[in-house]
Image (cartoon, rainbow over all chains, first blue to last red; front, side, top):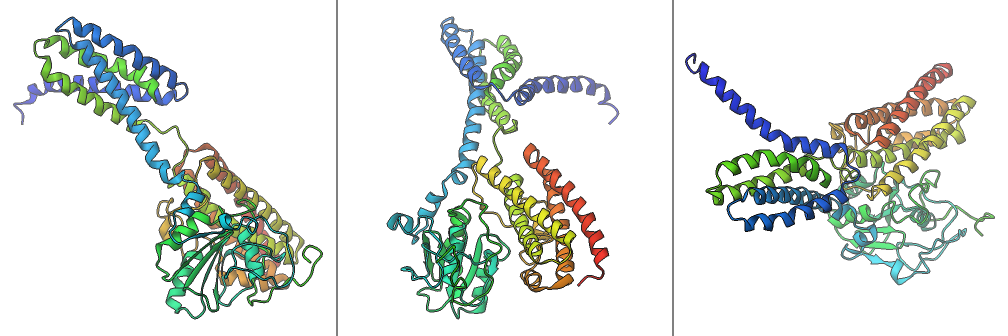
Length: 269
Length: 223
């Protein structure tokens, strides 16, 4: 232990040198961080400026130093740019996909915005009972009052006339066949509870176990574990709103029962 | 980012490489590829270390905060509007109205961030995943301080001063949870618009907490 003592001195000097060599790139990274602004023009100029130098020196024969330097510099640039491009492409691929495309990619989804453009325009309010072509309905005229849709879980059927109004405000309406076993209902409720722009209720005589509605969209599945349920909610909740992301879900009808509550107001006769 | 390589990295690399080059001009074939590989690795490393100039990513704390706080605020708006409509005490109704309007405005702001960042208002992460130890803070699927569906129903049904007292109790609890979440994003984010808004929310809600606790005292026992 004590004998190698003196030898440590030169070795530590070496370490100092290597770290010194390592520093410049790090310094470069820092300086770049300091000025994130006008980077593009400088890069283009630099890359072009250095390349022509390479062949000229190569003609001289042995003197490969400048070529190597230029090559290394170019590769560093390629590495930085490549990493940045790779990173941003990887990140934004999913996030930047428009919600309409995400919805369209869900197999089995029915897009009434395409097939029934008139139905899915923002609709006037209308009181009383309204007949809908789709079951459960996905859009169209509706009562002035919406069904409360801040993650509300209704254990009895609710009125279409209010639920459709909730869809217009960007809610996804999760419906299940009335009588579905409680453990399966609970799995659906976990996705809904306490989350704004969601509501859930049973529907009598539903053709499938689960049917999801957003304004102009519908997806029917048979299993509560179907991954498309989450995909549908992720793509269409809030996004499908006809009135933007801040349309209200509170202050709505919280009662159940399929008879609509708005019997006749000046706003919706 | 590329400016870097020009001014910083280029000059930086010059020295260490040039020195061995001069010393071993006889055997260039060996070190040249090595130097190139080292250069490429350096470039990738620099690219990795440089902070992103871009906007928050889809699963960033900022995006998680914007989404989850929108949900959290939405319930405060709902409770505030119920109390504004139904409470008896004038100060409680004023407080309820103030909270509802302020937080509804903040929801709009947070939704605008997500649009600005080109992100969906809906995320793929579970609630509170953006927050350190956030998953543990989720109770029964609800974020910290949030009222249960049963409590909300109670608030809708309560009458007289019971309404006022229940609102105060639920909103105090809601504010405590909200402040906790805002403090968490202050600790993880450097995005200025996010941290400023979080700090503002903390300041507002702490003042409101003090006021609501005073109101609670003046109205007597909790329901």
